[in-house]
Image 1 (cartoon, rainbow, N blue to C red):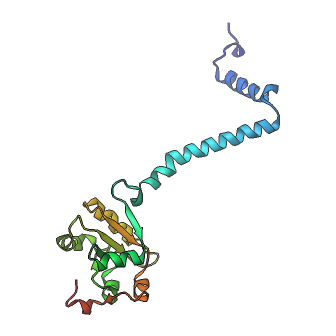
Image 2 (image 1 turned 180 degrees about the vertical axis):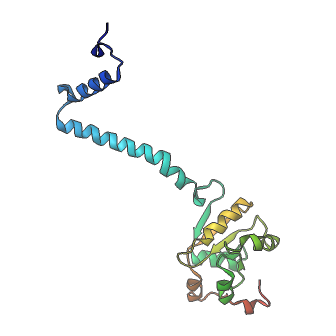
Length: 183
């Protein structure tokens, strides 16, 4: 008859072997044990980031291959608009757009996207360069950029400035009344 300790594969025996290995003199001093624990913690952190954190970061708009939305400066945006090489898109709610917006900007807010998209699509070709903007702390330009990218727009630029910065630079602004009936 076999005794419990005779079976090498028994769970209690495996724990004893592991605990014995950890206590063996050839493993080293307490410093070596601490070093091994640090390496294990770093490896675990790396695996966690690889599996859970990095995939979410890479799913953001700016990392989508072939359809990156670039951050552009106020000056670069103004140059593109002056040369008629881009369409400026105000992604703020219609009320904010009506009060004041960059002259010539079309309004396509994230909150009214479904109702206004068909009108927008009839005015803007999918191959045109788009510059999207909103107010500080506003995420609507990212949301609208994602929705436009899903519908085939590829050349998307996010202006790294606010409408107030545009006006302060002396660039033209408009209100809904200045646009002969609105856009």
